[in-house]
Image 1 (tube, rainbow, N blue to C red):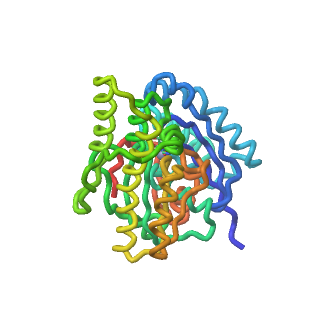
Image 2 (cartoon, rainbow, N blue to C red):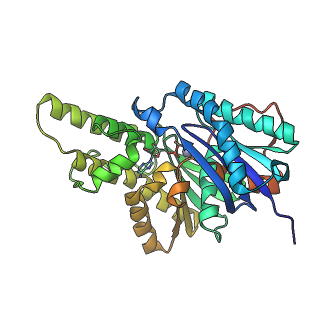
Image 3 (cartoon, rainbow, N blue to C red):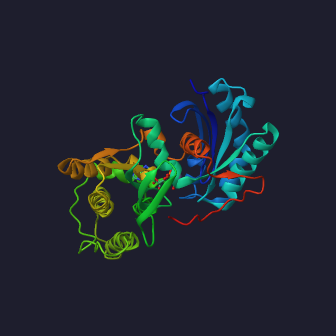
Length: 337
Ligand code: KG4
Ligand code: ZN
């Protein structure tokens, strides 16, 4: 029998400080997530400088708890995997510096993980039978992109938004409606009691163009401003239901089309917005008719977490990819490819 592999995964790209130990890529021994949501809520969104300061404050005890809960001795780890991008520069620096220090003092390999690939890898934890190839849709606060995932460590970009990310649009619409950050879950709650009866987008987006969220977001903001100026009442639940339906339609139609074009029968979702109930149901309904299986991570693995980074790190370790030296620098904008 081959030796068990233990990977420590570190994530600090935005407002979650998270460290996890994962055994053999799929068994989570610990996954500690320290969220700063309550702090950033006060400002209506993530403040990069405050995020970095809180990562510094928290990362030590998150590490200690991750190691303790996993019941492992640090010297028994096989590698240290860390998100090196994309994300907020100051926030990434904290995780990367911590990872480099650990790799140095423990004399372990350091693996540089792309945050987007981590979101896709979260599915390997929830679905032990899942294997590439598949099409993946990553929908988060920073990304909206479709990939052909050819193997555990190879992917190619099919399409991505040319402006805002879907999560960013959820957050902006929420703010305009007076809902708290993070907007996505609050828009979902309001949408559940509203009617999707407002047409913010008059024409469906052309399949030949890159998809876009800025137009839809602006249409919602203009609608609210218009109503406010005219002192007319408007319904937040109806706005949320209409926005959510139209936002989801943009990604779900393209995701399904991409599966058809690639001749692939598995569609894998990832990222914070993949927690959205309406999005899951809409995509499942479309895929069912075509015999495409839909996979998404369990709710606690949709948002940013160290376990998804450890899992991605495991496959990179096995294939000897992404090994980095102590000169590893964070990259806030890794090109999508
Ligand atoms: O993946 P994530 O935690 O961080 C980034 O990598 O960006 O995604 C955060 C995004 C936020 O925009 C948040 O509003 C959105 O995911 N989100 C949701 C839901 N839960 C989180 N959007 C729609 N519906 C949800 N239930
Ligand atoms: Zn993320």
